[in-house]
Image 1 (tube, helix red, strand yellow):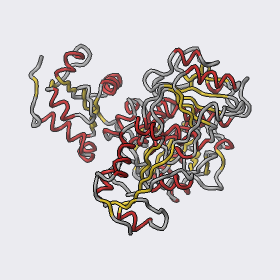
Image 2: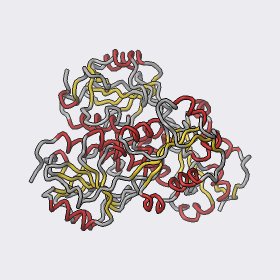
Image 3: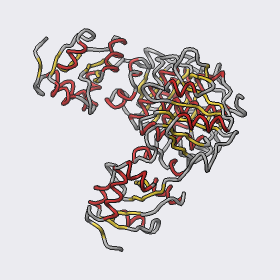
Image 4: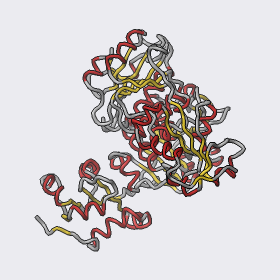
Length: 260
Length: 260
């Protein structure tokens, strides 16, 4: 076995922790940390991993599966972990450099847009669901960072498979969608919105989901061709943003050719 | 203003904390705690509340809305709170005493069954979604307790509106469903399951959702008339239990008369 690292001051350990804690550092390095057996396996499968770190206990179990760059003490493993019961398996992953210029949207694609979505658990669940249902891409606009440890963990590995665009403003997002002749639907709680059951979601569609508390901004709603609502029997505010997104993605993926 | 309580040893405070921490105590008293403005408002609206506790700061804001039984110091409010940024509004609520004998299932009802579901966040999201979509009742069998503080918080108030049966074994659940001629569908990842898009979910149906890691037990699957699966394009394990339940409830609520 390699030397067992025990010091918090080891440069690889400092680098890993800084990737966990500091968004700006993640974005500058274009790297993000992944923790846990499942996520690291997915990273390896996606051929998206750099440094692999194993604790001494994890090394004894998984040395055949992962070739670690660093073996660390179990204590140090607990120090760098983001979870309460770490499995002692960590790696550093590359952010895919995906832009609307290098990889344009497809006219027959099906897309999910998040605007001002702030909860990492919701974002993780949306990415996980988008991957399971086969959504072509998630376009994350002014939402919580998709490569934060909380989001990455909540995706259960979908972060390595789901195509994700991160965008800073509605106008460029809207231009890209219109440029590809994608019809945008704003998910709102307005009374004049169409029931989703009356909309023909399918290929060539994008569904927009807004902030957990405030929904979509007026600017975002204006950028869409239609407003839609999930008919609800109980309290109109009762569907959580990720659940609403999931039901709308399901409707979009079931549908054939969308409305034009 | 009433006397401001500052002591952790005040009997009402001890009672409230014990309701937060001790499941057996909750079940013995048939009471559960609710925290936060939204939940307490929902409890009052549902006319389901006993003791109301406000912190001094909350009293200044909400004395017109809630008549507190106890006003406590802000420090004591932080002590009894389950959240990091408490609003200082707390109450004790009654568990509805709902049984299959006193309130039988209806042959044209639409039901969601959870078996061995363990995550409080998932349970809360399922109850919230069931309420929003108008599911007649959730039948919780051997799952995490629905009146724990974590579940109650995650329901965002649906706990006061959604009809919930708590059951200890599959055989009595199955007998009640069959007695009302409800057709049960097991949500599974089996290859021989029907696509949900090929099933006629609607009235007179119950959809069964299992444990997050292991799905439904063989006993549970055997108790159902059909097996169904949500068609997935990506990783077959990628849909979270609450999301799968949400999509299936949506399909059931959209449908008219179910298969018989």
